[in-house]
Length: 389
Image (cartoon, rainbow, N blue to C red; front, side, top):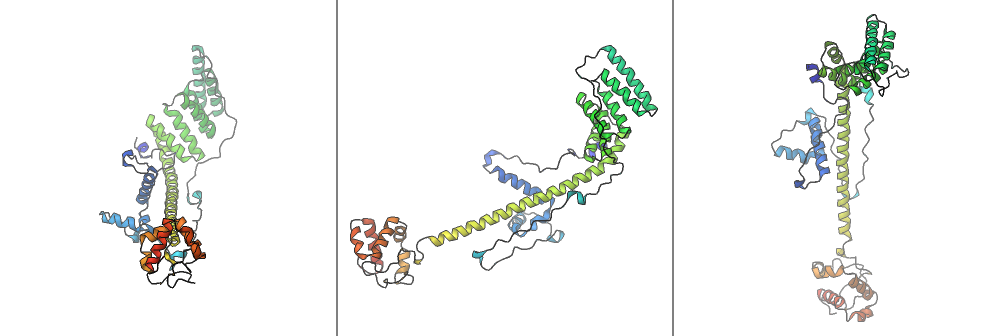
């Protein structure tokens, strides 16, 4: 019926983000695709995300493709990230955690008609391994009729006793459990009714009656989602006005719970995406910082201050070198630093070890007369400064 069709499928479960199927031939990271799918779903549900400062590049791209972005006035504004004069000495500002909201605190449901659960011992269910003879079936039918007569007279306790006797005689007949469940509902014993309905459904899942009475039992307990699912299933299997009436009463409350849950799921998704954006931003900043530090450590990046031991006293009498901690500003220095052969030699540990040895004692140059790498480097330096090696 129409009432069943209006009820959302899978009401008893939490709303999820549909996953996209991607051809493996695209050679794209599947996790990144899933993240992108979740992000698109988030933008659909909350376009205000697109006005976050960190997503300006994405907003510009969408507009360049002809998309229309809702104006920021229709959505909450986001503060710009604080800018600092010295980008080299950034201090991480901790992001305050949002206040934890109680999902129950904002959800108000009309619980009129909800009762306290029954806590009695489970009722007898009958022995399914019992061999049921025709005589037992006939006796079970007689007990069923007696139970129906007692029920029509409003004698619920007697009706339950007769249905129990009928179940013992024919324990694999689903209708007997459903009938007894209907009496338990009238007696305000929803948990007992649910146990009977579960049993009946396990025997015959295509019967509408167990779903109807289990739905009514859940309604008594305030289990709105479960009640709506069972009542909608009963209407689908075998529509009747009584079930439909109860479904109309239950459905708005179940829908309110579902929407409430989806709201918090969206908040969790937004928070997860924001955390991923912050992590990516932090990783990018750390990578940039490491890159600059690495560039600063490279030889020749700031004059010859990186030469071990300085260059004072280098053999060959290189002009102006004695006693200077570095050689920045010396004639020919720019030419020297622009020579790729010199820069490559400065990366060679063997050459630099020899350079340090000779710088400490110029007489040690004799040890390297037969080392072409060292002598070529000495010659290169001498020629740059107009001295002979």
